[in-house]
Length: 348
Image (tube, rainbow, N blue to C red):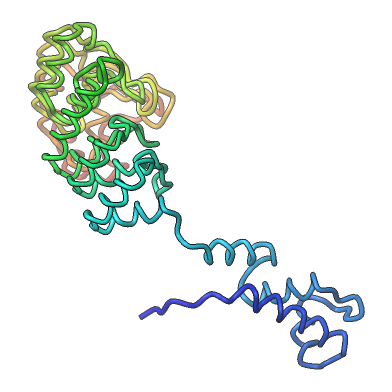
């Protein structure tokens, strides 16, 4: 079992550096042995040199790095850091009490492993509904997005804290005054479609029929994510209200809604094909997927949803079309170790 190692005291190290300096200049053998790995000339040995020896002996590249680390670690945690800790560890009463005394904490942000996040993101992700409510009451920005472009409601939905989802949706709708990106609906249409919240998608369309043309943070249409995630009802709703079916995602992966559905959503594949999607459409983005048809996209996936390929082939998909690298769908499947898919194509 690993044990925590106590960091050295900076004040003591300063004293030790001066003591080492005097010992080296006095020619003490033990001190000279410590210095030899770093310096050969004892007469020119200075306090800066002694500090470097101490730093290296304690695992630091330089005295500056040692000092910076120890000065930071010796400081008490800030009020903001303590607040985040209370949220993360489930100390709801203490967090709410601290927020009552320091409402400004609602606007704090903290850098995490995945980028900057607000207290509301953390509370929503952790399922701390009392803290979520207190943050809303304190004036926290309800639809602030983190570096992944996700608002707190996404964090709650992703972890199935549905009571918090409902709370955030209602609070956002009440406070956003009809302005973008939520337009009085509590959530933007692209994210609502992605998560399968059909009532909010419908709400957007009722408020503004042109909402079906909005795009998400990576340039995806409102149709891409629901097609990918198998939200057939939302796909049908969007198509019925004029969402373009042959539209490319332009910011990250590329591809049309049919490409995204072909990964693992056979019912959406069938619906898109029924509505006129081109089974031989191409991914136009300059990336690993360039030139992919929907069959290529299906062939790559670990789920190996053969129903997707069956629907595509029945609609006229050509398994002999090559991607930008000259690969057939069966070769893409083989390269990715999709044995069932390879066997399917061999028998087709």
